[in-house]
Length: 434
Image (tube, rainbow, N blue to C red):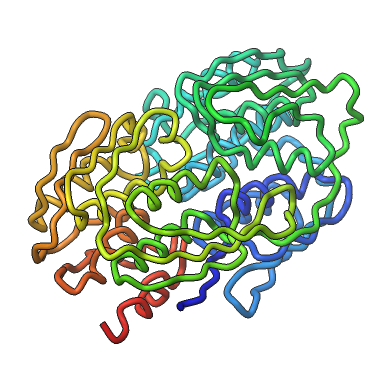
């Protein structure tokens, strides 16, 4: 039995970095992800005047101590806030700045500049936010201009595609601007923002156990405007854990993953692994920061079975689809992934990247606009993988390379550090003695 812990949850770490400086008291948050994206959120908030002190932990995580009471004054609207490769930083920060009525230019690397931003600029402008794209319509960089006077408008908004980033951007604008918002979404998306705001004393109305469509509401009427400081340990990242579970399946090893976040909006991939034949025992622990925490113990099957996914499950496992796709290539039949067109606007077009790379290795794969069909086999595979500097693509094919019948090289393994520094070292243990 291999026993591991994974880096702190990236989504929770982002939100802690963005919200803790706005609390009225000090926050101490342990176990943050030390990935590049979270470092970007910490850096951006410090550039806006937050006092965030970071300490490296022995196991590779980060502890942050954050003075509360940050009262952002409107900086020069030409102040560039570099969001790097992090879509979460850019989209959530836009909502926060609009709500606070402060300005700045949000920008990022070439990959982030290519990702769609209309999904947040449209509702934020509908609330009264002043956002102007500077080069291309609905793309970074864009300027958030300070609000001269007056309050934002209340908003009731129906999100077309379930997206935690869109929901969070609007919700943060409402909370920071103390104006009511109500959002409905067609399927469940991750609810880390709602849980953290609730833990800080904000009256957010949502159902943490719901499945399918639902609504999130914020009504500031009886709220005093105070966000209380946070003190908790960030649970392990479920998406990072997924790739280690995948490595265990490829190598037929039993695996125990301790203290991992078990948010219901993040764990649909476990159901798929069980459909593929894995046995997964789940042991609950006391919650931290409003988030459920579990230990997972995986026992692999002798043979991986094919699967079909689509519909309402997709938003809850969107980040794990690259892993599921490479696992599908080693099953006993045909797997289908549908309703996942959102993958085309991630760090790269992940549907195309998966199809092209799997095909180049010798896998029979069909690409559709919204997904893939993959014929699994046990035949030898070989070739070179182009990651397009996308950490999920690099990690997925890193897992596939552990198969003793697979001989591949990933062109940019260092990009794994975006979410999981040391990932390739972490998976080496699965291939030992095989």
